[in-house]
Length: 145
Image 1 (cartoon, helix red, strand yellow):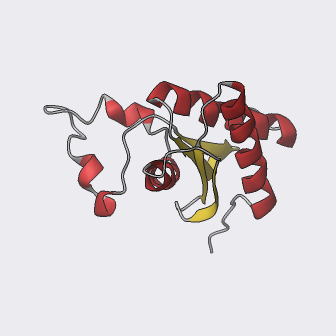
Image 2 (cartoon, rainbow, N blue to C red):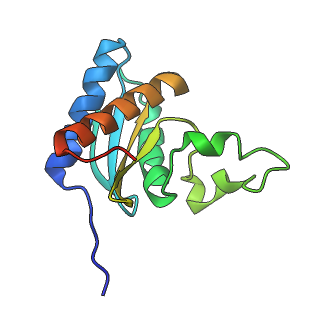
């Protein structure tokens, strides 16, 4: 029997609030998605002024970070012709996102969910996603991976 650990709704909202606080600090309204360990959406918000085109991207970043068990950013350099994962962004119905801004939430070596952000530059999305994850780890008293 498998036992599954996953983010709950309150934790998802904690991640959204931390990401939104960082987005406000850098003055970039964001779309923020939180997924469970399988990449299924738990919670989503679009800050006032965030790009409507970023809704699906944020959700896909959270999906990718959870399902692939790593940051979306790491796939960016790997998904070019000649690299072993070239074309991976066309898998999973086109949902596999290779743009920075998706970060898994890992507790005791297990991915329990992920956060995905979109609407800024890839660098801004990463900063906000990482801020949300760092806040989560601090609040939960767990060591960052």
